Image (tube, rainbow, N blue to C red; front, side):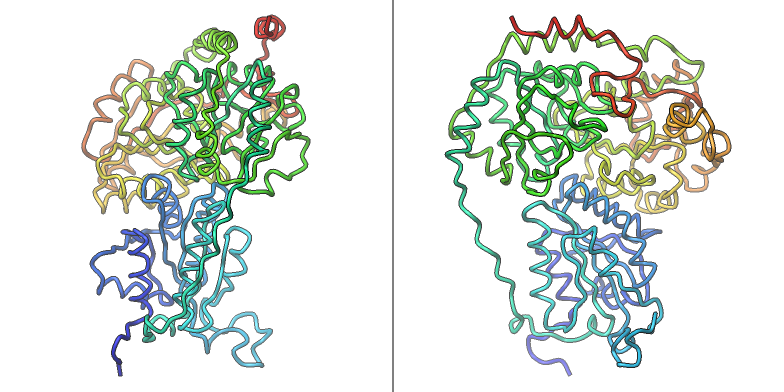
Length: 586
């Protein structure tokens, strides 16, 4: 019998989520999560999104957090439902995106070890799976509820861990019999948050200023950690005082307008030539929110800006302490937003007009790069991306998948400040962009959302076209069709003597026109360069649209870095001597 102040545990969970500003929960129903999902019938302030695959649910949640909501949650049943979440959870873990994942578990009395005789039994309850230990390497906190009375403490602890320090996903496994139990929220134990440590930065800031004052050729790198720490406002205050070159990693590419007079380009193994050259000729690197992984530094980090002192700000001390050949001269293990606030108090100005002018002149030198000189009979992907960036306004969200198309997008799209562009850069799974676009559109109803896919990547979560259609979301789904894993073909050309095993035309694609009809989504085909101008009308449509773009099978990513070479030595190679002489200070 229900007593005064008692509510069902499932109802308490939904109220907690709503208090954390979660309005939508992507999920797929199953027996072990049914009582939790039933609670939505009693709470009209929070809704669920029924998806076709739990992997998509985690990717929807990931994008939901990235593109405006700040926090998200999924729900999944035990066994395969929970394990399907793992790829999407990994996306959030490696890119530091806060989210919560609630899994239903079999009843406690059906679990392994409930009786002594079942301690070493492989499985007792139907679909019983130890998702907690599976998820631990890719979550900040993973826990199976032992008693219903723990629920408040565990939810508060999980949320705190997820959103503080270096953010990331958490997972809570709730047995089915607990979900329907009655609890009294007033009698539940709370989690006490640790007190924040005071910043003691005087000595660090003195050293910071000293490095800047002595530097003749400084460069700022913008990374995704700026967004994870909500530091955009403090960053803009800091940048107003700088007259030096600025570059970005892929994760930080939308943090600055690409027409900004200080912006050179994005850097790394598929970076812009000018940006990579400027970094390699700098004498000081200020890295804001980038862990400087090998996609940025190249496969041999010791070759990265080897004549430059390096200041790296990172909340994760393990990232600062890794020994991979990259020497760091000043390590600042702080929350970037807090640190920028302190730096802004000191009114530190950095002006190197001669170095900035030379860097930007170099940028103009490569304004019409080599990939635009050769036009194929089909669509040149760089021309298409360039036109797409011209057409989209500031109120747009562009989400890339993984493969050649993502690289073309990142190399030639010109950001207008206010646009949001991202992919799951750390985990980088095929099949991310479509479900992620659903998460972004749900929380940004008035924005134009673009899912940028390859013909291979779209197929991994193609079932979510039905989710998109059912929800009547006006997402534009671009499919860059080069007929079979182009980025792998280029790798095979370079390292495997052009043996295209499991790539090229051996990979089969569906008829995307017929597929569009099945899901009741408008279909558009861009066959040659002259057709690119159609994109403006298609983008301005208020309905969902599939846009198939016909690309040459062997269309290359240009430029790109071959393994072991420094990042300014991109292929096809150019003579760097005269450029280095030009960039040297007088």
